[in-house]
Length: 431
Image (cartoon, rainbow, N blue to C red; front, side, top):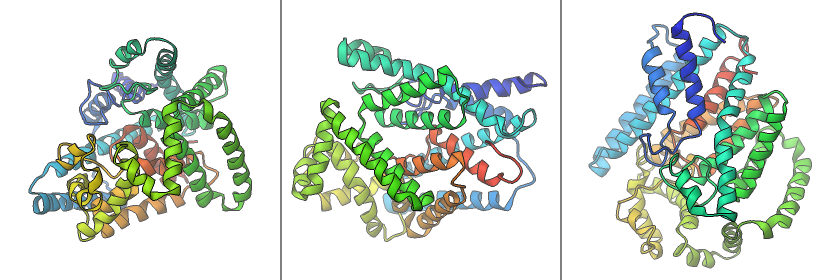
């Protein structure tokens, strides 16, 4: 595929390994907490071998780097003054460092690829590699569906445990959280739809993506699709509101028909959410018993009001969890005895806002957080609505409404591709 010496071949092999291992982001063999990416090993090796310092630094790179340093110093200062600890800073530093490593490796490989191929071939090559990487997770997902519903669930849990640090008893593919499997299926579907040449394998995999998405019956996944539609309308298709509304009605009818066939777990969640929207007192009752619903609905609210507790300067990067117990006990004391929430109150578990936008605001305050959100908004607005990356940006923005990890390789890959496409649209196209 590539001309040149052994060094170039090693670079390409490492890149292939990175993409093939992306689906294994909850590996018992990788470092981390909730996110334990197995791809971190070839990525770090690539970085160590090919990292080089350029004497020519763009103004934008300098500004961005300086801003990140400011956020790190700010986090360290807040950690020491407010919490007499540097644990939040250490976690934030870890996330910043490895996010930077992944960004460097992706950009470096794109530049390397340009030396041998036309720019438009990159996304086709990347999508083919991603397609191959998705085969094993999909096969495992199908097996999980079969065993969980028709055979001995214990067998498939044993098999799944080889690839993830915890099993959920649900369709999770090679991911420790079902949320992550849904994200992977959505991103995979869009990628293959937009960039991969039409073939039988492509059609079969796209069907499997959709099938696994529906049988997983993830409330988060369904809400993400709905949010994506609304975000897409606001950003790119304000004039098509009526037509998209018709699609939504049609989709709602199909969902209503299929509702009785969804797993009982999902049915109960959807009914509970509906009841909560009708009567807040029901929420108070449910919240004291169902920690999952409480955390997903209340955590973003706590993140917002935490600004007042931090005097609007923020809690520091990855440090929201240190403010959380105090706010929870003052605002929602009735859930403090919940077996799942009690460890959070006691400081045994560090919780997150469950929303990227409010995580940014709660941790970096009105000033720094506002700058970051404004930067994201301006970047997205630069994407042409006809660009295939417009759909990726919309989906990621929607998924961030219930996802808040700074370091997540599957997102980083697409965010870098979106960024590169915008910055190099005049002289180099990825599609």
